[in-house]
Structure formats: structure tokens, C-alpha cells
Length: 75
Image 1 (cartoon, rainbow, N blue to C red):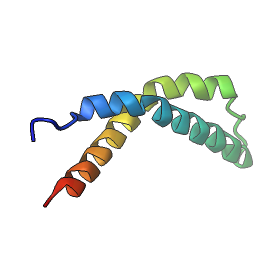
Image 2: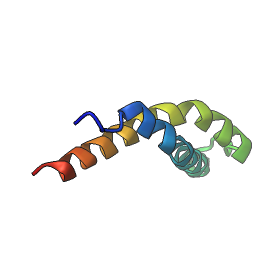
Image 3: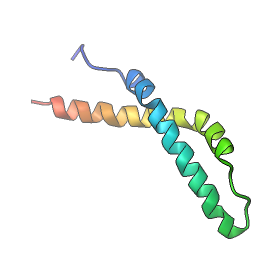
Image 4: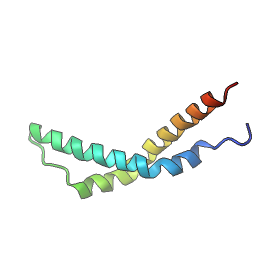
């Protein structure tokens, strides 16, 4: 078990994908909130917010992948 990838390494590898998913979801959420009278969220604002919000998303994705790797390695 000493050759396992730690969660932080997995999260670091998955950060770009998690931050991209967060940016897309924030932008779409901003578009949906227009139905309630809010202003649309610009793509730049969504990308800016995803830089920080991508960190916990990547951490959760890393935990999920670590769990899947552990489950697949069980005899």
C-alpha cells in the first residue's frame, strides 16, 4: 500500500478539470438566474470565481478517485 497516490497529488492533477467544470456551472447558473431578474454572470467573472472554487472541487474529485482506486485494488 506504500505505492498509493495521495489525495493531494490526485487533486493537483484534477484541478484544471474541476476548475473548468466549476466555471461552466457558474456561468450556466448565472444565465438561469436571469429568469429571476439578476444580471448575467460574465464568462470572465465565472472563470475568476472558479480559480478559488476549483480547489475544494478538485479535492473532492481527488478523494473520489482515491476511493475508486482503493476499491479496484482490493483482492
